[in-house]
Image 1 (tube, rainbow, N blue to C red):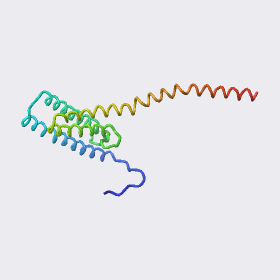
Image 2 (image 1 turned 180 degrees about the horizontal axis):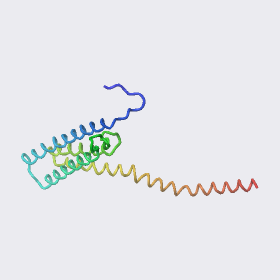
Image 3 (image 1 turned 120 degrees about the vertical axis):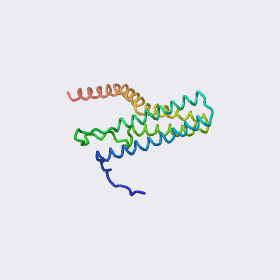
Image 4 (image 1 turned 30 degrees about the horizontal axis):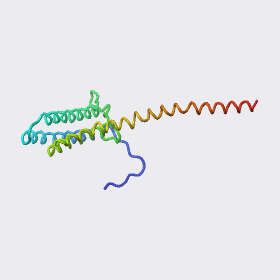
Amino acid sequence: MAPQQKGKQGTKGAKQIVEENKTTLTFYRNMAIGCAAPALLLSFLVFEVTKTSVFMHILSLLILGSSYQFMAFMSQAKYSESGALLDSGNDLNMEGGIAENVKDLIILTSGTLLLALISNYFWLVLLLAPIRAGWMLWGSVIQPWLSQRNAQDDNPQVDEKKQKKMDRRMRRMR
């Protein structure tokens, strides 16, 4: 176990971010291929091929491919003509970033592909992705917007009371 670091976490250099992004992309590419290939082979060679299984496998492959391409696009580094690093791209290993959610989606889809070999009911696990997206949308956009709107509706009454109080004080001062 690594010792606990005291104080602020050190910043990463641009070259370190590029290298870590490459290893992260390689890991998640290997995970996606390592789960999709055996799942496809086993399900189509050993098990019965149905419309549902074909559709769900195509959907899973689209999710895996688009997620990987999105991460690759996010982390694309920019170099000058002389080969110097201009921009390291987004850090895929940053906590709380969108890449973290995309990595979770790859893990969820890969696990679902393997679990679907046991039973077709495991395809329902993929419904966790839109449920999580809705939950995140509620927590970060909708609920704050509604509570801000309610707070604005309550404030004019308070402001009117404060205004009346200020008017009374001003009358006393005269």
